[in-house]
Length: 279
Image 1: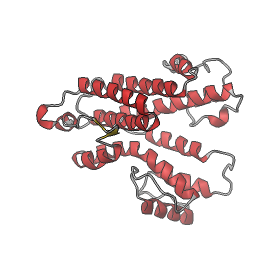
Image 2: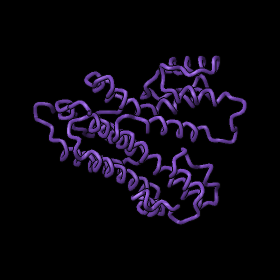
Image 3: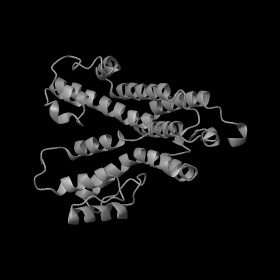
Image 4: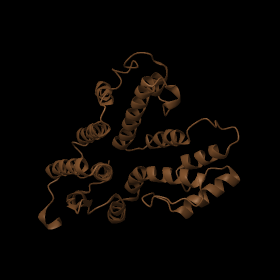
């Protein structure tokens, strides 16, 4: 059972635009919100920030002097030390999520498949790790995103006659069906209730419009699946995901990003009535 964070959720700042920039960022979220969370709930939110660590680790493995994204859980010194330790010993470093050590070991292993995309291998390990979370909603969120990305990868691979199997991440039954099925729906219509919607979205030619619909699809999923989570860590996790989504939209497309930003904030304001004394 998640801890009740009534005052914390209620006091989340109302996000506003200032000169077309967010006044509250994903980075600030961590420094301002984490001190009020239990240690176990901090680890749940760490799962979100690990995606920045994944990218940072990949950069450092290819260039020890690379500039990294400061939004990750670990500093450049920590990641560099982890790389050096695993490279030398080949062992898992238990101070970090185990899949990071596994990835480093595979990266330096002479028998590793040199044709694989390391980004895909990292994604596979990351999704598998996050899906093991003891929080049902958060585990489901990562599984949901993995399925979306895999279905889209399979559809695009079919369109351009690429090898579908090489572009699928993970080892679930759904992954296997995507790799092997020749059916239009990959035989997954009964397993993935949003499959038809994904197929329609994938057919949209305008990339911005397609990405917008995908984000709105994710937004609706979060909305439905946290309907009864009023003041819990799940609600905080969703706010964080929404915040990062909006940041990305503003950076990708100013006009459309701002429009999506305002619509999401309106929805958030309707869901969580922030007491005046906390604004």
